[in-house]
Length: 123
Image 1 (tube, rainbow, N blue to C red):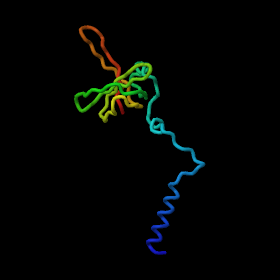
Image 2: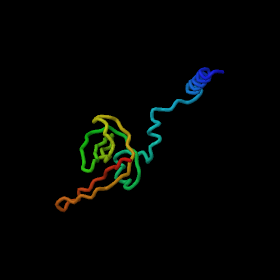
Image 3: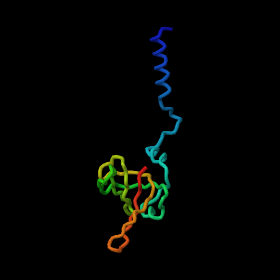
Image 4: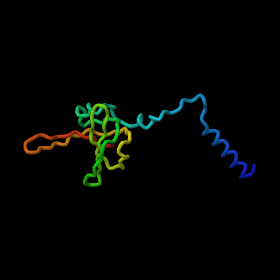
């Protein structure tokens, strides 16, 4: 068999191996979500999960640049909203997202008033 025929056979076998079988289950569009670590929670529950990895889902409500190359964006679901701190690019405002990260508490004391806030540090 000549070299070109061997190449053709390999190409055909590769194509057959890549075709979908009707008997195999199709991966859902949530496969990426399933691979992300963290307990899936509603945003109202984030405050009780400090220092734990969680996963929240919602729409991007707003965004803000931070110092040190970090960015922040606010994600809202039907139970509330939470800020996400990341070094990654931020999708457009209004986009639906699923975010995985560690819940952090930022202590803030303003004129004797506790203004501490909880946020998620995206992984």
